[in-house]
Image 1 (cartoon, one colour):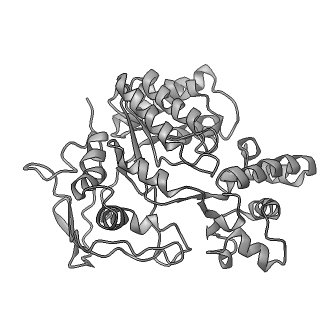
Image 2 (cartoon, rainbow, N blue to C red; image 1 turned 30 degrees about the vertical axis):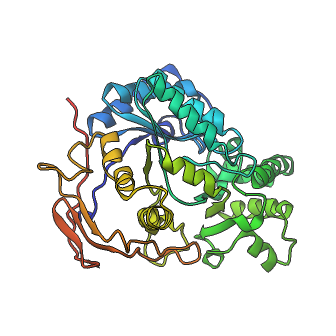
Image 3 (cartoon, rainbow, N blue to C red; image 1 turned 180 degrees about the horizontal axis):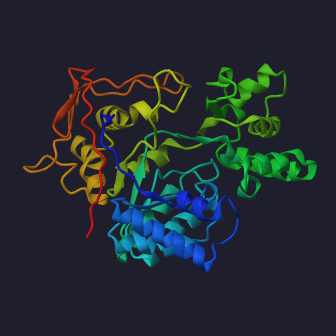
Length: 398
């Protein structure tokens, strides 16, 4: 069954690394690197937009910068770009921005800080430096850009609080480390540090369960709520023990409130920042996911454009359409031109707004009347038509 929307993809560094090396914390051998390069080349020939990486996550966290540069060069040979969930977005944010720029510069391809943010109160305001780094790189000829979602909370798995070394191998290996008292104590130390200085925001109320498959009753509850329900002290220290216990039981997808509005606004205003949700497709009513899955684009237009005047309407639309389309070489999309693909949204600039909240995220935005995908209506007068004209988008190369 075809989708209702268009869909395209990057080739994932983590996907390739896991296929070739498994979940091992080591560099690839020469033969393994050749295999990884061949896989990148094959994906690019099949129409991938470029190479993506998640260097904060395993197995990407086990890769050196040089490994990623080598693979990026292959993507660059095919006209692709590199995008990165950077290695760190908290205390080592500036080092990670420098690494992302270096990968683009030495890999000889455009590079992008994806869902760029500043995590942790210790780092709030550092977007001044990160944007200055982007500007300096662009001034010397490095093609650097940014994408962002308009919220002060991120969403990822509970394992984001855990050190990468503790997640090596298979599930049984991770559980064995958690069961060993000395190793568990080492892991706990890092988890506590991250709860204080990174995504935990130094408050157990800032970490909220979005979706827990093994205990759905936890959905929507914060670590503070769970501690209270268990009759335990509501403290960051107690939250560290709770995080280990919950991870041992299966973990969860969570929401982490640890960013500052001023950084969000500053990043959004940068001329080479585009809007992207970093979201997914959820069954209505499933869990309590991040509102970005429903409200990203309407929030920018309703809140930051109309209510706050942070951007002009035209500039915001450019950040959502032509800028990202051009970035991934979709030259007949993201614009209204004769001969371009008819991907169109008809909306009311005076009424468009997001309704999704962190407490009630499963709410569609208001003010979008019609949506056409490849010239076929998928939304008419605010109602889904049932049409499914979506296509797999590829960048064809010789």
